[in-house]
Length: 109
Length: 117
Image (cartoon, rainbow over all chains, first blue to last red; front, side):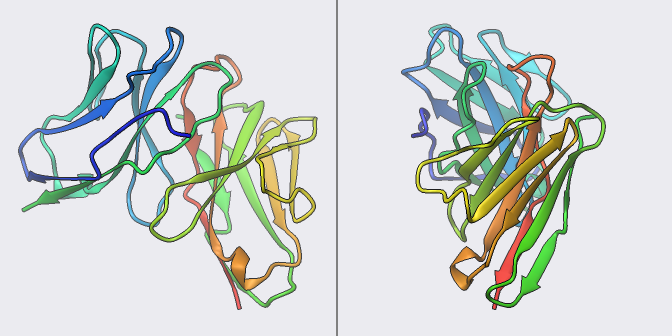
């Protein structure tokens, strides 16, 4: 079973920042938070992951709360191509990557 | 880096045919590869974990004799759907993880859409 809770869907205007929340209140100390997205009819694309510090790469930023019970993925300037299903997953070491239902993000022109 | 290639991207075949899907890690070595299945409007479901040089580990409810997995090298895993039937029609996706650190992310192929007539 997925260990995370995400809103089913979200909308965001093109050019604005998209902030996708994720709750993982039962996260263990050694579990990382991973974010993937899946554009229609493609395989999931890795976005970013982190343990407790905030992380940033060329795609997005990941903000993890101090108690690690929730996190937010930020797409700073959303484009139409960012329309996808976004999955937040927690995993440690050799654990399996278990996908929940994710958030369907729609970027509107 | 971290590119996973999956082939073929689409297969249409008759009921009773066996279909082989290849998954390759192009620029890294992967001790472990994973096979997922995704039905329309559903999330990805893990089918099995493929370990190089050993038998695959199947998830509950997945028939190992129907979904044959071979992981003969650190860059190649294959999934063979034996005697495929229409209910096996689905989107099959593989992923691979670098050997170096198990906290490294898994990287996914672009999937194989299997249609059984």
